[in-house]
Amino acid sequence: MRLSDLGGKEIIGLDNGERIGVVGDADLEINPATGEITSIILPGGNLFRFGKRREEIVIPWDAIVKVGPDMMIIQMNKESVKVQQE
Image (cartoon, rainbow, N blue to C red):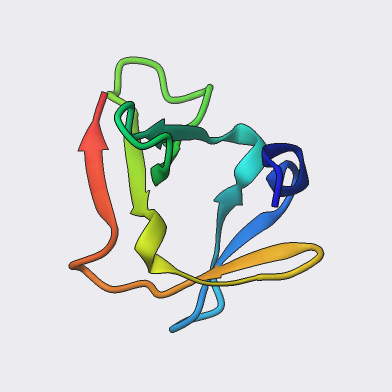
């Protein structure tokens, strides 16, 4: 699979069916030694939330259950998804 194939796919949580974000808006964390993708980093917050810190959602690559034609399904549990403040 190519990186361009991931663009535009919605990220959906398996447990609750909630839409987490879109891969096109995300950054990828890549292991420089191996070239493998280690995680997807989704920007958080809203452009209209002035004065508040934005939170990023870091989804480890291992949390991906299935990549389909329009969406990516991830296993949402506290161990696999981390929220970081920018």
